[in-house]
Image 1 (cartoon, protein in one colour):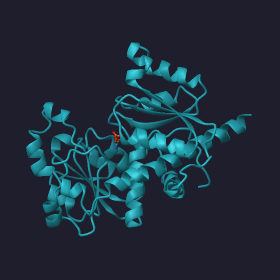
Image 2: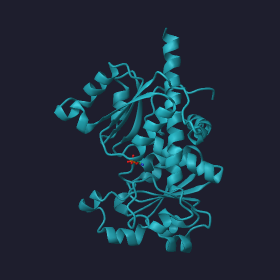
Image 3: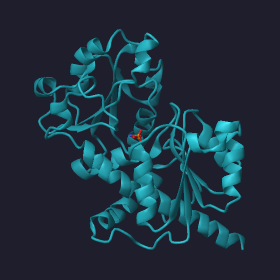
Length: 316
Ligand code: CP
């Protein structure tokens, strides 16, 4: 494929294998910029990128902001507490007002599944989904895939196990769509109450047994247990969850391959879904995922802004 043509990045479900490969290849060339003494190139000089976060975020927001700044774009941060949404304005009206300020891209995180797609249909700037409800978190999926490829040299044929709350995880969905397109075999593992019925239709294996999910896995991606789910009665106690599904060094030594890769999108609940000796251990690439997030987000910002510029050029 020669170039990127999409204005937006809503999810990995709607991307082709070639489009995912293009983002990953572009990210490889951007990764080196962050290792320079002067971590800046003029690629997006004159562009304005808005970060609109309706939910808390450490990694995604700062990673997108650094990615934009390293490409020399101007950035503007808006959050729920500082926006007029708090006074009753709709998200659509807020975004239309931001659009009227002639910005180029809007990165949005919001608890409503599908909001990124809905907004992309009604505004001109690129919409980049930074996590919408339980739907998708495409740049997390991409940075996870980038990290696996960097460490294992390939995606095709790898066994990837995703452990935890699959039902409420946008990270799981983006990983499943992306990894399947690139030829990985996926096993989902967690309590039955946290695995959506019929998810096997996505072409994944499902197990409630952690030992089974660890055996033969080349990669184990551990999801954050969302504590509020316990209140909803979806699992009995954090202690029991940690015993049955918490990934510990002892369990890895007993069941997993010698070269297993341990991933977690963050934020982690140490001692619940992952023990500190695994999080900080030699198999863990958790902080490398964070480092790679900047390169992947630089690639996404570059590609969508380039597509916008080409479209504008054709129109004029
Ligand atoms: N992985 C992730 O989305 O982390 P944040 O919530 O800190 O952005």
